[in-house]
Image 1 (cartoon, rainbow, N blue to C red):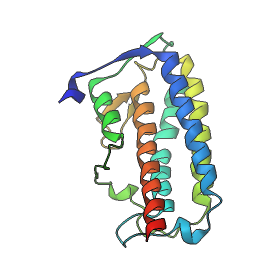
Image 2: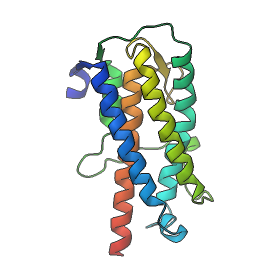
Image 3: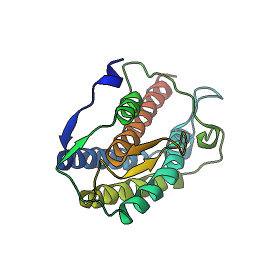
Length: 192
């Protein structure tokens, strides 16, 4: 219940800096995955679990949805940046729900975002890194618009829109969640 009530106010610049740092760490982690061979990247514990590449492809599918929309909204916004960003109640809930806990809480994936058993190769990693570089650019561009007033449609429904600041947090937390999943895949692989 706490997720619904606790809404926080933070400096817009501090939020952008924090999210940019997280994105740089994500890029470094993805760069490290390039040294693995295709067998390692496509290894799966079971037929219904994801491989490392399937986790990244899932994130790429979300990037294909969110990044062009964010870019378009920033480009066409006539809002001005504000010193403070205040999480929306729904945005705060979605962002926090994405964060991995001790034991990963499973979530159902939309069919169009589920890469299970897709034929994937190492180009998935390059696409993921390119999306993260684009995200860094968009975070930088967002310094010129309102993180509060610019609204982004969610993948859940065109009727549900989140503040730009919440969308960035949700999007990056979702990536962090699946990078933790990749860590678990690597641990399971080593132990099997």
